[in-house]
Amino acid sequence: MIEAKHLTKDYTVHLKGKGLSGMVKSLVKSEKKIVHAVQDVNFSIGEGELVGYIGPNGAGKSTTIKMLTGILQPSEGSVSVCGIDPAKNRIQNAMNIGAVFGQKTQLWWDLPVRETFELLKRMYQINDKVYQRNLDDYMSFLEMGSFADQPVRQLSLGQRMRAEIAASLLHDPKVLFLDEPTIGLDINVKLNMREFIKKINEERGVTVLLTTHDLSDIESLARRIIVINHGTLGFDGTIEALAEKYSDGKRSIRFTLQEEHDLALPAEMAAHCLVKRDGRHMTIVHDKAVEAAAILGFIMSKTAISDIDIKGPQIEDVVLEVYNS
Image (cartoon, rainbow, N blue to C red):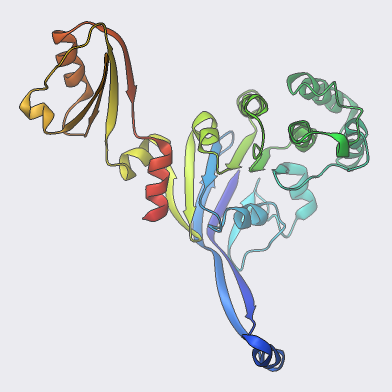
């Protein structure tokens, strides 16, 4: 559905001199600098995949999305979405895709949401049956009935984002690009948005490319993650593979003991563990050299346990390691 081959986007920046003399000199002969926003990026995304596309600010995420949507044309390399070149076939590409940019709106500011949807119906030439089915479905799941007849300018951020994502899907696109769709939303709206994204991906087979700084969105939704940093591809694979490659392998087990117990781990186990105690709570952080099963077996053989909580590497720590590599 999406394929990028040696995708590159460069910008020419005109440098201004310092002070008045520098400004005058720049008018006569300005210095230029080439900024490599995206450099030789390669990836392909199959039909029905839900992929997280992440990176720090300025990494090249939004530039990539703009090339995939046809807003920008690559400096080098090629990109295809549903088998066509987005920049050369912008109208056809627009019929195949939906896009939500968290900081920008595709809705008409002074029109009620319902009338905006009617305009989109005509723009995309959606037949009555498909339009009504999608409208009913999205109105219900996204709970838009209470504000559907309000002007967009009167909506809260959460209401507007629900309307935005519904608007992007009215014409049954094959691919959905989401750029920071949950930014600034409260937890309830954020959870509903995640559930909706998962629903349209699983039930309708919509291919989704999600960019976000909220890594809990990635953990909740993405089956695969692509990391871009300084314009280049840093990783492409599952979250589990990412953790395996970039984490130090440390995991933690938190025990709630039925009674306080001053347990001491065997020397060969203790060499690879850090033990923290707080009353009946005991947390053991261990590396790859010792299996969690061995720790569990030892502790449970020595004392009664009320609860156990096992945690792997935290995604925030792993992604930070990728950014810094």
